[in-house]
Structures are given as structure tokens and as C-alpha cells.
Length: 287
Image (tube, rainbow, N blue to C red; front, side, top):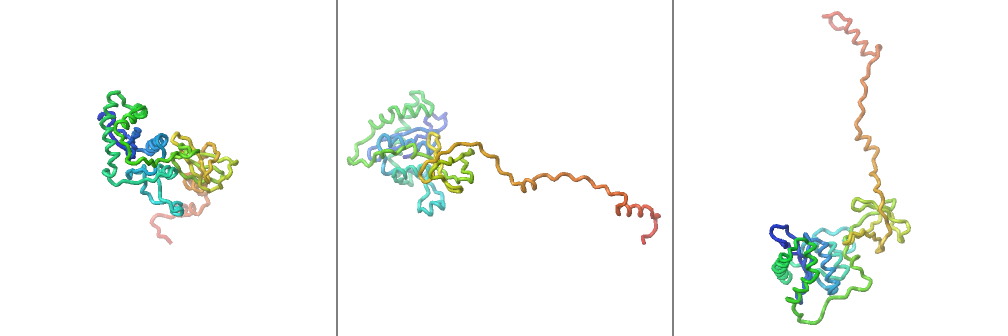
């Protein structure tokens, strides 16, 4: 699997990216177009491949951050002995797909040659049909263009063994291809996610305790699920409470009120000293 950035709709239009997946044994291809090489388009291509051909045993990719990550493992990952994974990598792990990374374009010769075929034939087809949108390009790919390329260029494999696996019954790919983030439960069983507040219902079993971590899963269609101990939780959106104000900090930050000028009384010692000094004759020496 690899992305091919190119001026698919002509040099006068912005680049787009064709995400291409190729069977290394036969050269069978399946692809989708997106504005850039994103996690979502990689997930959608693999999803479509699984529905048509089954789950591949291994996937050969480059080292872009869609497929692999260079970040250091978190404390939880260290304790579990797990390597850091991208959202795409987590989806592959759930499906039992092993990702192999290439270190040069030459190592991905099969998919690079397939890019060349698309950049020749698909660009011409888009121009002939006057297609200039991602939606139109994807409709063309799904309605026969990929099948036409496979009929023309795919080759029979050397061996008849097929290492694709069937999708197990009960597995919903919409729950596999998701983005995950962790959140910590507050004392009132609420949490925040993407500038919104949510309330976890008290009837959940098991019910997370305050300070427990939950997993927020966002599907490709935008639906959000909350998971705790591998079980989905019931929740609802609520009004986000106003931020708590530290009274001491607020007092410090408040501008002090101006104090009125004090006017000394007639009997104040300061007035008495001024009166004595005014009564002394000029030129007299101080006692």
C-alpha cells in the first residue's frame, strides 16, 4: 500500500493523492482518491480490499506516519511490553495483519509501477470524462476502472495458495477502523473530548471509577463510542461547565481600589510641627 501524490486533474489544479493497494503475487489493484495521504483514506482502502478479497496476512508499506510512528512508548505501553502504533497500525493489529516497512522506493517496485499505470491511464480517463473532483474520481474507480486495470494487467499467481483470511463472523469493520484516544473520568463521572463535555450514565456495568481511564473511539462516519474494559458505555452530551475560579488567584489579579487621601486633623503632630516652624522668626538658629 502506498500513496501517489500527483496533479491528477491537470497541472493547473492542486495535487491530490491516490492511495493504491496492490497484491504482490498477482498485481491486482484497488485504489481511492483523497486530498492527501491520510489515515482515513488508508483505512478505507484496506476496508474495501477486505470486503472484496479478505484479510491479507501482511502489508508492505513505507515509513510514513500514517503506517508507523517514531514516538517513544507511553508508560502503559512499556508496562504491557507493546510497541507504539498509529491508528492504522492498531486496526491492522486487531485484524492480525503484520506491517512490513520498506526503506526505499525500489523496495516497493510493484506498487510504484502500478502508480505509473494510474498516472498514465487514469489521468487520461479523467480528462476525457471532464472529471475534476475527488467524488467523481472515486466514482470512476469504484464503477469499473480498477476492474479494467486488473483484467488487463493482473497475472495468475505462481502458487494457488491464497493467504487471505475471511472476516470472522460478528466482526464489524466499522468498529475496527477507528481513531482512539484516552480520557480520565472526573469525580462527577464526566469527561471532555474535542471541546465538548459528556456524562457517563450511572447504569453502566462495569461503571468506571473517578480517575479511571476510558477509551474514546471515533469511527470513520464520525460516531463516537466510549469503551471501558472492552465494553461500550452509555453516555450523553452535556453543557460544558464553566471553568473553576481560584478565589485567591482572582483576588490577586484584581486591580486594587484607589485609597482616598487621608487628611490629618488640626491636633495631628504633623500640623503642630508646621505651626511651630511657621511661628519662628526668620534667620533664628534652631535650638
